[in-house]
Image (tube, helix red, strand yellow):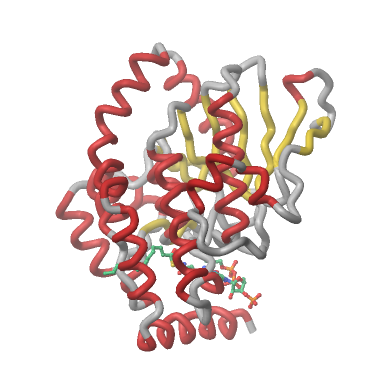
Length: 303
Ligand SMILES: CCCCCCCCCCC/C=C/C(=O)SCCNC(=O)CCNC(=O)[C@H](O)C(C)(C)COP(=O)(O)OP(=O)(O)OC[C@H]1O[C@@H](n2cnc3c(N)ncnc32)[C@H](O)[C@@H]1OP(=O)(O)O
């Protein structure tokens, strides 16, 4: 997507979010299969499908950026806008976040967005990543992640930003922050999110080792709240949602804010410096070589 450079992503997203979606179809509304009234209409964009149920106040948001839901700039943008749209519609109190791609929830950062790209592009990309994290982490909605596939790195961060996580019981669906194995370092706000979820010692170990946990271990360490057979992920996510929605919104929202604000504020205070750090780090020759080699390995693994 060719975006004018030099203008901050967040400013543009807040002022004219639709302008970011050149070449996408966000806002399109179409009847859901077998659906009838407004509550069954779905909307969304090319890469984010939203199935709203006005009656229950819950929307299912599906990532569909095949083959692996890598977080491209377009996907990040569309996620932020879809979430904002639901936040602004008082009909909705909860969102179930899941994948429309088989076997993968989200493969994390789209490495092609930071490999062989210029610093301006990397900066724009990183600002979009920050924006998505801030929006999800502080969302007033109840967010439940229905993790129906592999969930490494940036995928794990999206899941950790939700209020609750349900993981399908499949040994291939591993979850965790594996950045060190790519030769990169999770920034402080990813680390903080990890620590807030599984505690300091477990994070220290898992972050350094780049651990990707299979379901039983993910449950044991507290990375996910439930592990269920694959065909029960959605229904369990809905049951969890009902449990969270049974709490009065204002009390739950204020409590969420109390628990998360300090972590988010830490990034808000130094967002530009964090972007600078990211750009200067990923643009180093040595890091570019590591990323290139990792991408190459992924591509060859397939054959
Ligand atoms: C002090 C300074 C501080 C600054 C800090 C800077 C560092 C910032 C760190 C930011 C934190 C976040 C980091 C990340 O998210 S990095 C991405 C990590 N992701 C991974 O390691 C996952 C890699 N992918 C996989 O393991 C598998 O693809 C997966 C298990 C997800 C699915 O396996 P499957 O067998 O189903 O699919 P394939 O492996 O065959 O993949 C299909 C094609 O997709 C391409 N692919 C996969 N992952 C990515 C990706 N993340 N980005 C881009 N492309 C990806 C893969 O190459 C295949 O492509 P081809 O079809 O062309 O072969």
